[in-house]
Length: 187
Image (cartoon, rainbow, N blue to C red; front, side):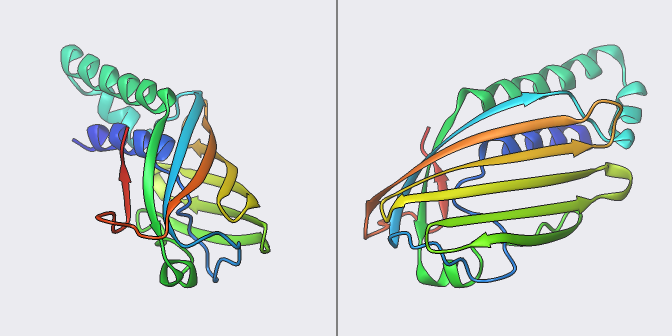
């Protein structure tokens, strides 16, 4: 079961980073408030599984292990196809740093740049027996209605780390968020 959650978690890590990032301070980037649409495309390499999960796989029946491995490969392929999200950006969310601290590991985030046109952060998480990961993100605002960025994640915990490179393009849709309260995937 833990391995199935990991497969879903890898898919989320590769596909669900939008404008929402964790930061220990208010985000200063001067984007327009309201509904945003963000396209996220991920490229992955490596196949890091924390040692604990690798061990669990070794103790499974061959058909069960094959199903789990197929599910993980499917999740990774899905993440690489690209997705589009809608997100409601409000002054309150910006003042809170646009996100929540990672509760699954011990993480330390640091803001590298925080201006009206650029936001950059680095997050390092150590997860004990589940491995660790680093995350580097850079966002550039071309105007208050357009933002682009990259998020690079390296997941350690096995002989070959997994690397995820995401390219994000966001555009402002409306000053009203309508039914969107947080973030939702639209395709």
